[in-house]
Image (cartoon, rainbow, N blue to C red; front, side, top):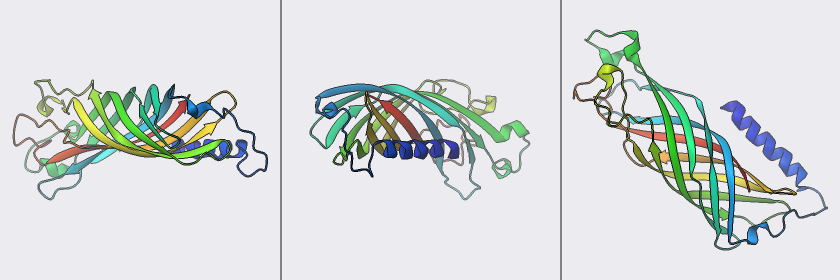
Amino acid sequence: MKHVLSIFFILCSIQFSSAQLFSKERVLNNENFDKARLSYGYYLGFNVYDYNFDYPTDVKDIQVLKSTGFNVGLLGNVRINDYIDIRIEPGLVISRRELNYSQTFFTGIDFEDKDLSREIQSTFIHIPLLVKFSAKRINNIKPFVVAGISTALNLSSQQDNPDDNSKNVFRVTKNNLYYELGIGIDLYLTWFKFTPSIRGVFSMQDELIKDIDPNSRWTRNISQMQTRGLFINFTFQ
């Protein structure tokens, strides 16, 4: 993920230079771009998903091994005024997480090494509804912050699967609700607007489906499990 962040900041630096922020020359690209009531685009990006756990008893934390995933989707933007926009960004999000349990979760019972690890691969239909608050445009640059809520349908949730961790199936909820906060920069190029952005995604609900056995070693000591995610998107309009 460090490499992804490095690419993000390098691209921003290059675009800052090309936008002539520190130059007396002020050639405005796409000067009337933001005056349209409706605008559209698409985005590509990366994500890193994590889980935040709450435990009813004092146990060692479950370690989450994170992987970089992929985002792709569409953008619809409604202009309210020069500084506020409403946007919807339906897309497909692919991610992978691996949960590693401490042996203390299995104290007093026989277990195998495979019992200490659970892989969670997720494919989401992710639909955020966001409010974009922009600063005043400076030459060909306009920074902004964005906030809103989103819903996601997890196509890989296993929520309705009758099997559970006793048969190596870790189940999570199918429908999820999040709040999102982020920042970005609109860069007005000659032919289009390019927008790199970074956004945090935080679950507002417990996503764990408990095992059938109330004494299950995999779910008994978890009172709540919530997603935390980081998105880096590159939008083209």
